[in-house]
Length: 196
Image 1 (tube, rainbow, N blue to C red):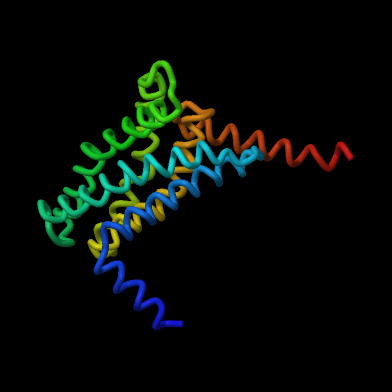
Image 2 (image 1 turned 45 degrees about the horizontal axis):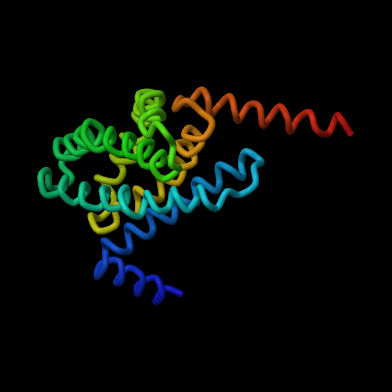
């Protein structure tokens, strides 16, 4: 029971980079698989592997290095330090992460124009992220120990991964496109029983 949890925390402290990046990549890939399932589509394991590869090679490592650098630059949990970290995160890391996702996925999918998705969806996705990530990172910087922050970002990133993977495949990076999809799903579910 509790002893196993202590061992896991000890491993996280001893190997925080590896543990955090692997967890981040796994949760990001799960977000992709969940959004496909939520849309009633069959699994696309090749796509989910691409998402996992991008998260493993770039986004997980970016988060790990970035969150540690932020803590060194603005140490502690004082309100000014926390707000500074949130602001830096949203102004510097968030645009890099969004741009790298769309461009990286286009490269992995061997698209002819690797910047097309980024050009068409970047600003919408970045603005949507501003409705979610500042609140996630505020709680991260206030409550979560530094060695677990990438893992926590990955946990919260599960929801974001579902959204951004949907946006990359079918949406336009706006919350509205995701809500329209959810509404269509609800309407379809409501209509099914009446057809029988």
